[in-house]
Image (cartoon, rainbow, N blue to C red; front, side):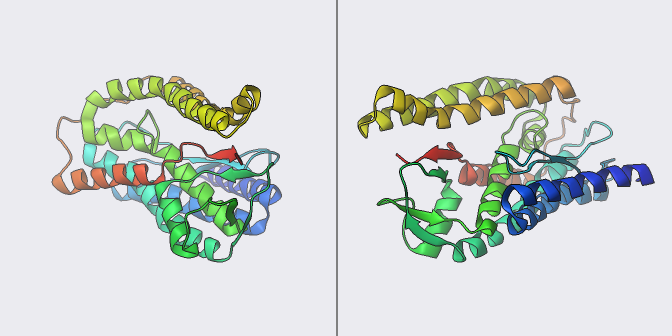
Length: 292
């Protein structure tokens, strides 16, 4: 049962995030992003309640609006470990699915309101995922960025792109992230070993991505120092994600509570594969980078 004090905390955090996201990028951006995040979190909440799991209302996380999106997303607290793998899968997958059902049409609408224009040397551009690139291709009938041109995002499209990025991060199959719950439900207790290995691999992925970007910048004629500056955009996000996930693992305890030996039912096994395909479709190796 939600007490009056709890309701006040949840509502205050939500309002604070609405304010910080509005200050950061305007009311259209704020309404779009907060709508996506709310759908995501209430997907978890409704699924948890329907499956008899003690879950809290979402705690939205406001951030200073300078050099951020104005929010770090939201979290939901589960009162106890979930042993039933089918229930754990339902709660873990429901948030990303609900968020994507909101984000994809909003991104398509936002792209239709956007313009294609020339890139300037000092521009920072958002990264492509397979899904995002295909949506741009569908709307503008060309692969972007290319030929010194890229889409100049309408605030709705910008917020929906952030929604895809947040979903991608949440679907990383590590620890207490949504992807961690999904992988735990699919793999059982063996997931803990794979989760730890993947966590260690995140900085390595960042180094590889940064190395590729460094080589591309050198090939484009940049000096080694300028190439390093370009490559940092591929390295830093993966390092940050590794540090944040390490902090989350320590804060929540190193391990998930043990789950049942009963595997997922066939329908949920197929759904778990679909969630993996979704993750691949929205992976954004370089969230932001300079124009090369």
